[in-house]
Image (cartoon, rainbow, N blue to C red; front, side, top):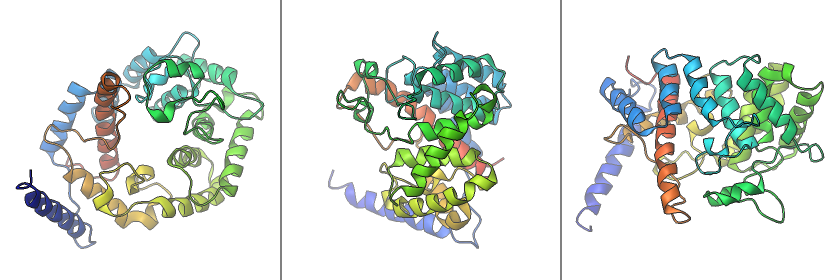
Length: 334
């Protein structure tokens, strides 16, 4: 082991040097090669869930949105809700707002209309599970504890909440996705949950947890321009506080430039263009020989067998996410 350490340090230094050099304005950006993209496609088709395979086909091979909906429908329960295990760090397959959040994100991305029966059923279930007294959706019910899960999804007996649930997670994200499905909601409902989320953001300290930023970022993405201005300014301050720009730390679980900046259309991109470029270079340089990308978290110690299944699913999800980011910034050779 000790004999290999100097080589690792040299390779790491070379990698960081290449990233720094390639990020300068006068250089052509590093591209994911045809061969590397082909390896990633094989990896997703061999490792990913059928859902990720159909999403890959939709995004990169002119696949049908109906095929995506057909795969997603396998996660929809008889009550109209979506299985929590769409989020692979919980293995519980009962319906929950977290499951609905994941599903509506996909349905929105593929352009599913409000008339789609899967959308209608999901919205109906969400309305039934809304905590009207608190004005939020709870991430998961206590029943979810019965299945293996990461520690952050453990629903506490005393509060009825898991670690990452807040007044805006998952409520703000759901408010964002529901902007396109407002016709299915009672009058005033969408305004209520949107305004409560924006009010939370306006008074929140300038260092929020990642789940809050994720949820609020989704909401802002779907708001009309007139409603976005103040929220964007606050989120820019939040992002500046938590963003990790040191590429040596990007192999850990933290907020990287690409965590919340998914395309050049992001309102956060202009001020972060250089950091995003470096992060894209890093992504390309860290693709594994098998075509996939690794993970920066684990809960193997809690349940090794369950984690092995979750890890396999996540590898497909993360690889597809990375390809989608690279494509959005025109970093894949055509």
